[in-house]
Amino acid sequence: MKHLKKSLISKYVDNMIKDQKTNDAIKKHLDECVECRQVYDSYIKIDNFVKNFNVDIKDDLYLEFLNRKINHSKTKISTFRFSLSFALLLSLIFLLSFSLTLFTGRKNILKVENYTQNNVIDKSFSNFLSDGYSDIISTVDWTEK
Image (cartoon, rainbow, N blue to C red; front, top):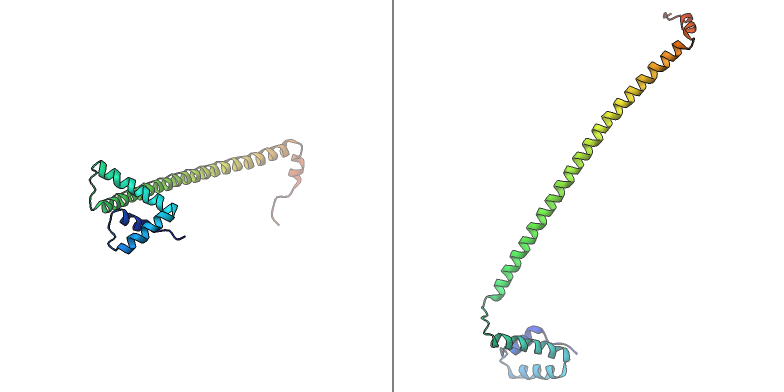
């Protein structure tokens, strides 16, 4: 069974449908369809609530709702933009500090390597001279030919 549109049920509750045949068809459908009847009953409850408590309904209530929705969306967007900017800033700071750490670490590694190479060469040369190899070095002809 095809259900009635909720907007049509709402108009029926508010007596806004002028055609008697349409009113009769809606009434007949509401008698047969449980789901549409539940929607109709909920609209009747809302209508009674408004009438019993003298709730002032503005004609531009829907426009006010839309304005609030738009303003809320703008707030969400600006909050999202702020969060995104903050995340990008933190990422940039992290990358910068990480790069500096690598750069200074690389400098220190190069210093250690240079120190180690020089120290090893100096020690090996001094060991070479101290281990009785000085006789061999003295016999080598260092002049270019």
